[in-house]
Length: 210
Ligand code: ADP
Ligand code: MG
Ligand code: MG
Image (cartoon, rainbow, N blue to C red):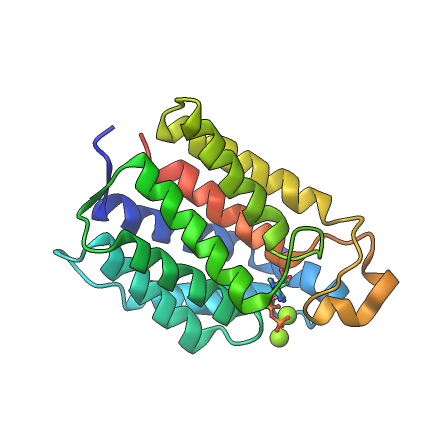
């Protein structure tokens, strides 16, 4: 492939926003079961704001990721706004001044995003949050590249791992975020943030490599 340039990063942001818009009602319904019924509307509002303020031609991958971070922090609110905002900000920092990201740069970018969410939210795997989708996705991405897979295959595996990680949240009891207020009653429902995180990885797999 030609490497991940600003055009691909832009396509990723657009596709993530599109997938969240398409799944807005599902995300909100999941949050209605174990939270406050706003995850889909929150994230959709933030990503639509991000699309409106994306910098134009000449913007670097970092410029684009930073614009998304700022929009999410300003517009999403709740738990997920600062968490996704931090993720995009850390990704922007990891991208640095590069015009083209190589596969290992992409893995480092997702690793940095995950670390940012974990520093901010203090959730580990198994607490029924977006971390349950993102952590296995980052691990799958790194493992695939480590054994010589190309970026397209590695991102496809990451997206699969994220979706499976989201599936695994269903039987869990939440111990972070609003869903933790429900205790045992949070069991039997998919965590909404784990689904939005899986959609983010799906968007990455569909747009970043090729
Ligand atoms: P709020 O719960 O404040 O209304 P959202 O509904 O937008 O915010 O987002 C809820 C999602 O945020 C949850 O489904 C979960 O995945 C994620 N989340 C909540 N707390 C944490 C945390 N401490 N660490 C990681 N993710 C979290
Ligand atoms: Mg909510
Ligand atoms: Mg809320």
